[in-house]
Every structure is written in structure tokens, then in C-alpha cells.
Length: 234
Image 1: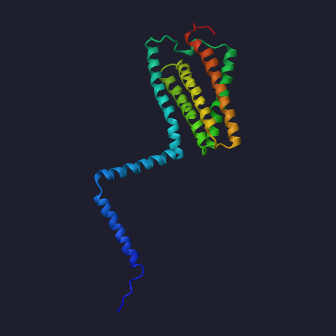
Image 2: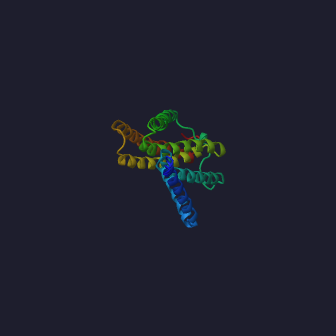
Image 3: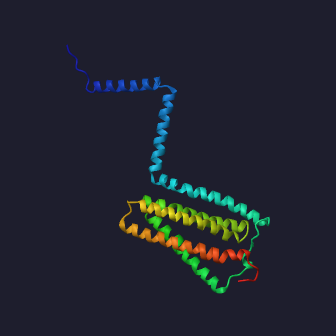
């Protein structure tokens, strides 16, 4: 008398055999082999993170983060040198008031800077954040800009008002370097839509012109002479 095998019995026996084989393979694997597998999984997870939006943004922020740390240490050192009168600059900018016409120019220039240098790049970044090129171009720029604002607010309270000029000079010089790097990324990027590409090109050129004038005219031409000027001069 012939007995029929239950339906699916062969599949179950095959699954049991595969499971037993896998367990045996794990049991006979050496510690070195298990370590190799573990490292491979870690490398795969790290590669997946780097290729994600957040990972690419974090990688593009590394140089900016290193600059912020180095700039902060340098600024604290300069502030202590000024307090110790080793670096002889004026600590209170109010001792050398600006000419009313120059003061009006500075007021309008700061308003332009808020609109062009801060709000416009922020809006473009938030609207086009899904584009990798936009994250790489504007992400580090905005990170350094926010870091500058926080540094100015903190060091002005902790030290003296002329630190604003020193902070602005260091950060603006680095920002011009950032915009140069952003231009290189922009030229090499081929995935931006044509309209977005044209707008970003105009934005980058506008930022270079604005921060170039800010560095040469406002900081070097107007503010730095106040740090060494005589009280009462304008």
C-alpha cells in the first residue's frame, strides 16, 4: 500500500534543511569571519546614510563646521589679547561715531543684506531642498551665516562691541571663499532644472557682489578705521 506524502511536506523539509545549514554555517564561522560580516554591514549602513539627503548635507557641512570652531577659538583669543591691551584696538565703537550720511548708508546697507544675504537664500533653500545641488550650495552658506549671527550676539555681550567688526571680517572673508566653492559645484551640477539654474546663477553672482562690497567698503573702508581712530572723529 502506497501512502501519499502530505501536501507541502517536501517544501517544509527543504526549509528545515536550509535553516539547519545556515545555523551550521554560523556555528562554524570563525570570529574573524563574523567580524568581517559585521564591518561589511556597518559600511553598507554608512554608505546608505551618505547617499541620503541628510548624509550628503552633513558631508557638505563638515568644512563649514571646522571653520566655525576655528573661528570661535581665534575670536576668543583676539578678545583676550584686546582686553590685555596686547592688541591695541578700541573696544567701544560708540567712542568714534559715524557721520550721519554714512550712518544712513550703513542702515540701508544692512536692510539690503537682510533681504539679499539672508532671507532670499533661506527661501530658495527651503523651497528647493529636494535638489542635492541646492543643499550643497546653500546649506553650508546658511550654516555659517547663522553661526555668525549667534557668535556676534554672544561675543558682543561677553566682550565688547568692536568684536562685531572682527567677527564680520573673518566670516565675510570665509563667505567669499564659500561662494567660490559654490560656483564650482554649480558649474559641475547637471541636474538642476533650467529655470532654477538661471535663478541660482543670478543669486550666486548677487551674493558675491554684495559680500565683496560689504567686505571692502563697509568693513575695511568704514568700520576698521573706527577701531584705531581718535575719539570724536567721524
